[in-house]
Image (cartoon, rainbow, N blue to C red; front, side, top):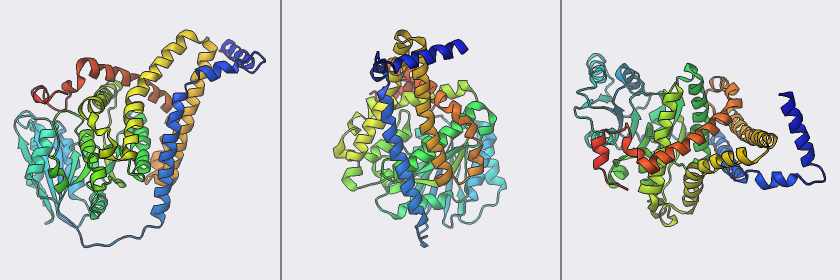
Length: 442
């Protein structure tokens, strides 16, 4: 270790010498990484703007409490679905909430089915809470469950949630408030990892959710640039949802629906807000195997949606120039191209650079990402977090967070190749194979 440090110091001293070894730094430094700095600044400025605006907001009291339908997609949650039902029934929203758990493949999913039925049979519900379970005996997939729930629902506002997600009791109130603006067709809710203490990988995801979902979407929403309404937790205006045909088949139905909504942005002057006070709590994969399997599907779906199914969405005449540029930068570059560039740079650097130079650049890049992550984390604690003591427990994850995100970028390359070469989205667990195979091919 001391020999490596001595070699590094010698090489660094030579770089500053008259031989001009600084040229090596100028030649091989990965400047593409600096493109993430403006995006993070955009998020920080948006968050600051949100923070200042919240300090001066005057609460609006209104008698408008539209009927809300909450569609719960259930598959294999078992007894965990009871926690979801309880958190929705105990909402403080004064209007009517219609709760529709849709059990997919109920003939095989008997534990979830019996849990929902027993809860309906044994619980005395308030007069403004309706529980209407739907048992889909033949499994049709997530999209089938959502559209089934939509067809049986009657609410003016439709909220879709996962069967293993629970919520703060003021969630519906905060989500519905945005729909007073007729230009809002959808609202994105926030998600937290509730099993963060279970393992290291769960803690890493808890920090990722805080920075990439909670913090990032607050900043992007201030510029009307929300990139996705999560499939685990989102709200929609029923009339608009029916106008565009509900959810579509294949996979990544949340990003698919978001892009279809954005196709009307410029035409109707729409916007998608993000509501950080509407909090959902979900379980993240607690093992590396489960985590990598989940991201194999997520990152592969990104390629399918952006490069195959929704290429037409990259049109400023549809989504407007701000969202067009964000789709190019965030969708195409950061999510599809950057992982390939990072892996390529790492391999070439390992092959052609001296060991000490490679270590130096690696530490330099690590430091850059650590500074950006720390700035976002500090801003989140000071301006955003509604649970600062809980979030402060994740501070020790910050030093390993850049390395985890680097490894995740490398894994994204595997996911992209899996989708490109094997059409991985057709192997999704979100729907049975016969549903995905009969869908239109892109």
